[in-house]
Length: 285
Image (tube, rainbow, N blue to C red):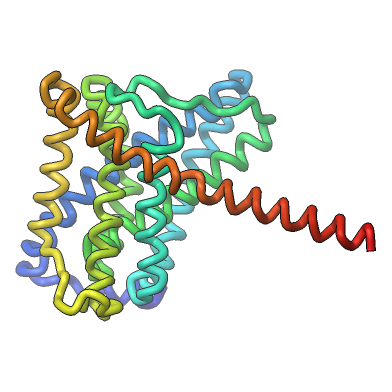
């Protein structure tokens, strides 16, 4: 926490602001879209509850979203300063993209959204808070992937908090016009996760040095990639010829994503099988 306070006290220079502007603008886009996904997911998970309980679940969901994002800011320095935490975070962002595009049939028009299970009120609250915690981690890791500077990371997390309050409504209206933006949000977090992996495999920011040269990606290059992905996503949803052209490549890409998305469930099933076998062995011995 002291590192964060010190970073905020030492105000960046005008040159640093200019250099960081593309990153901050990129974070506005990513956090705005993720805040919509957070808000819509909370509403979907609470939709099966009676009206009074639904309102309370929504309130707890928003409170949890604010609280966990504030808590995540406290750990920003630890994530930014630890190579292994950053590689784990980057892998997590890539995994999130794979689970979104690979765990179920993901329609290109964005019309399908998985509704919450018929949980009790308490179980619904727990599920919402776990999701809030997960998305708060996403915010910090995405900010770390965009810049190693602590003040930029804190700005990104602060933007995430503001996005929940002010940007979500505007982004929801945009998603109603362009449903593909909901999927573009996960494409973007996968993109920043990939950038972070590439930088850490090289000799950038104390990386692993597996790639024998500097793999740093500039702020402008990161923003250009995000703008390009958004442009292609919007064109894909509106231009039939582009959709026909890209659909085979998307189908091919979804295959490894489905495999990656099922890895945790497969590991859990293997662990449960091993535990049952050990228990059976002790019982028969």
